Image (cartoon, rainbow, N blue to C red; front, side):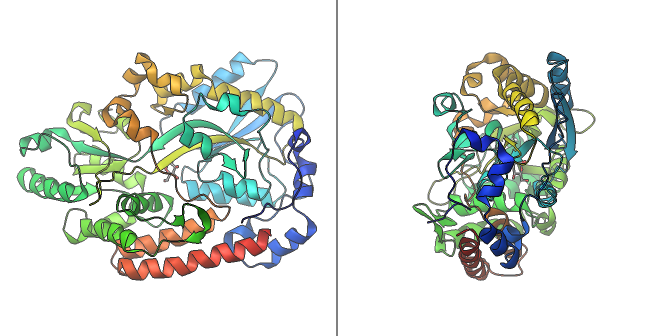
Length: 462
Ligand code: GLC
């Protein structure tokens, strides 16, 4: 069993975090961290001796979040500042949009003593790791179970580590299949593909009939998005990364996972996707589809809002269909769970933490989640908003993809060593996709690498 960094009891006093962080990271675990030589977990380091935080005691605090490609976030921050004028001031610090780069930047700040950040807008894959190393305030008392039921369960769970909750769900993401409805119809397809095999058949026919450059583009590069994409193939073919009952047992080297990676690779082998798909992130894929140069696209929900926007899109929204991702041979369609939560930096000044928590409440309120859905097409995490026509009209993907698809998305492995695991998954999945290694070879190597990360990591935090 994975153990926490120290055995200190959770309680209200833990929210006065600096002292808590020092207590949780005992000298022994500090030394182990420093000497372990384990890439990510060791590099996470420990908060330094001075309290970070952007607060100056005047209700001022700093909120970190990746640049918002929808452009709506600065408006939300401004609204907060107006509403709480004279009480709180939120300074929005723009971080890298790429989740891996953002994570690295935070890690560096934590190492350097906590950084200036008070509220962290963070990826759903981060809580286990940051919580295990004591970087986040335990919000269990402030966000009790009685309040969690009004949020979608997947995003809530993504904030829980060893029974405590470290964040509030802000907006959710799920992998979706976008398709050119007009071109499919012209080629005689009245429905989008149900399986990956059907996707290839349809793509080949439509490309032939319409002369569209690409059949299917998706995020295959060696980075976090490439990991989510590959896992959608692995999961939809019945494979897993970690044993569901024992998160310390790696089970990725399986025939099912290999079949999943083989299907992903076959997109290139069968000429449906270009070889360069193995270098694509969201930034490359989305414009290709919006320029009308691909029949299919795998993307997150907010892409739909950009389709038809004359600055970014040659195609009209009416030409675009949205569907659940195709299923594997066993009939399973699996969307990777994405999304963003709101955390408080444990090394931040307690007053700034209080102000920051008000901001978290503000952003997660139904009013502001509704606004973010309307202004930025972000999918709410509050269940009640899925009943509102206003929200359904503002974010048509909810009905197009089906609420079930969005709400049943599958998380990536939950582990305090996730960032290291992800680096290795990114490399091996990419090597299989670009044809450098066979799926079996990639998975065999990955199995060994993940086992090693978990073993070394356990020694580090034990
Ligand atoms: C989106 C998702 C996030 C994921 C990232 C990968 O931002 O919300 O969870 O890690 O894409 O690129």
